[in-house]
Amino acid sequence: MPDLSIIIVSWNVADLLAVCLDTIFARSSPDLEVIVVDSASSDHTVTMLQERYPQVRLLPQTENLGFSRCNNIGLAAAQGRHVLLLNPDTEIRSDALAQMVAYLDAHQDVGIVGPRTLNTDGTTQSTRRSFPTVPLAFFESTWLQPLTPKSMLTCYYRSDQPDDGVFDVDWVQGSALMARREVYQQIGGMDEGYVMFSEELDWCKRARDAGWRVVYLGTATIIHHGGKSTDQVVARRHIHFQESKLRYFRKYHGRWVAAVLRIYLLLSYLWQIGLEGLKTLLGHKAAMRRERIRAYWQVLRSGLKVT
Image 1: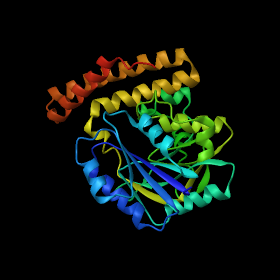
Image 2: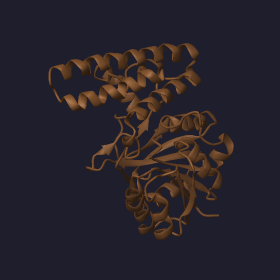
Image 3: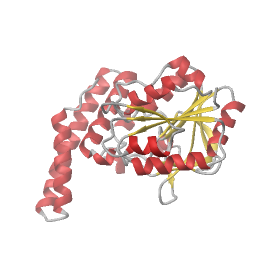
Image 4: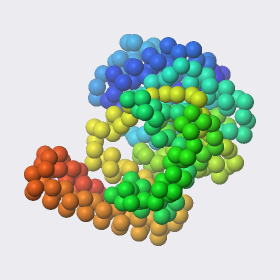
């Protein structure tokens, strides 16, 4: 049994995936296996993996199954004592993998750890969180975010803690999330009702509810270039993000909270369409405004289903 199984879900990011794999295999790492679940890429991902990375276990899918379901396929195939869910647009730095494995081995009550994550420009990406409250749902990642009370955002983003610190959190971002096998065996895989976004929030909540600690390990570092797959489908990204948000709040805070939040989000997109339309009439970056309007209309037409 390897110490670590790395599960990477990939969709049309062959070149970034190659860089990610190169950094994994170039580093001094624990005994590991690497599993790539390719979600029906139309680029040269599958061929590249077969030709350049024969040590990778490739699980190609015939259709785009979504992030959560593909991760579950990888989790079911994994043999390691620990599993790392890793985005294909990441790079491993130094001994990050060994540090994360060692931390789990040394702290038997910790079920999940997440590393310090850097943006492409070297700044720290916000990847550690508290569980979102109902009031926060109406502010965070909406047009009202600039008006959010500072204390609310500080608590949610855990920005009062040092980026290189080690401390307990409620959840960590799924771009690089390591869990011990016992967590997966106890709580099961990801909720496939989340196509993408909020799936790691839900998974960490289930782990915490089962008694496991979740820790931000700021001494281990990776780079995450961010959003390279979802940049290909902007409107769908908005829809999946908001529908996942609604699913989480319905699941843990009830139908009425989700229903009110859904109406609020739809009205927010309608407001944004009006605002972008006004800016278009004023001739301010008209092409960009029209593209945004098209994406926001698609969100409205979707109705943001609450599943």
